[in-house]
Image 1 (tube, helix red, strand yellow):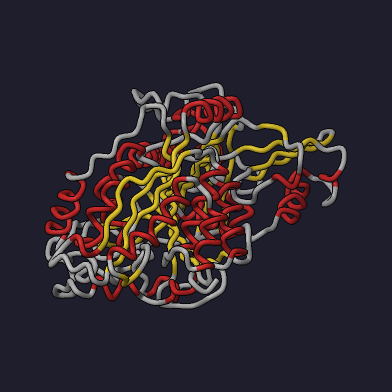
Image 2: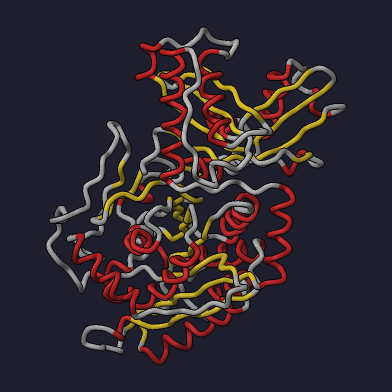
Length: 512
């Protein structure tokens, strides 16, 4: 795929280098508390691709957003976006049209897929830890989802060099911070962008993302350094493929030279995955090129595209009903998560001091919902207690409070927690969906599916984060599930009932 391999040329860097300001720490960056030992990916493009001063950066981003007013029908559900990634004075006016769509959606997590411009490698690098810093503050990584994706293929791994000097993810973050300040991200950088790599990524995204409040974003520029009249002809081929959601044809057009994109592989993977996730319409929101700004030089331009991939009403409603039938993963804000973690910790402390459960006010309808939940306690990274209810009959807040105390003092595997241990405990909460039967073992997704096995008097449960933490594949997961239930390691293959559930998992080590 000769054309796609051009993504290894740092084209966006050359265009953005026209606009340079002093490189250094932002003069008035937003202050944020950072936990000791937290992993922070510092910006490498502040002062180059966007202003290093937080106030100036916010003003510039907001100015572009004010000029962009894309309209979607009420019954249209955005599934994915395509955005450019040059210096924001060049591509920002185009990108803003896509980010205004994102503002309306308010996803919990944004999966960003872009090409490697500086490092050639095989496969896909996923950033699976900590946070990214921009002059506007920190953007947390959805660590659990990142590692869930990585657990499904040896071609997806954390390869730090892919992010060390890469700009295509970082230039999206200030827009995300202005329109979705509470969202987490999963950054993915593709290496060689082969059709096999595209297929792997498409398959994993389509299998993992259903039921989650996630937005997919492909980060790519279009043709590079042609006269504007030639550039638009090349870019129209790409835009036609986007409108048709035809990722296969896009790959063919890239390979034959009919169109050019530095992020052709990521765009094709997102087109294909979005189609699998229900998108049936591709809509170009804005097209432009680098000659639209500054001196207006149209002799050598880079093309920019903002597009949205949409699920229209009939299909969206069917899937919405299906998710309601099987039980969707619960969505909670950062404030709701923090409150539940506070409830868990302070209820344990109150019980150890007074021998009774602490009563908590609950005027939040979400926390009054009846949901199963588990509370996990760890001490220095080792399990110290874990108890929960698969299906609860009381509000979520009460379930968390009760399970926190049970995990601390009633887990038969451990002695009761002592009050002096509390500062050393890390608390994690898992809010569950309703369990459903597993009819095909091959459909089990490590990292997404928690499992319950029962056979005769034996029963065992493992939360979805456990196989990711232990680096198990599907077969290992099932064998350990049997072990948890007191069964032989192969007994899952016959005569056993297996249920699956999903979970919203969050803990005290998150960067909010």
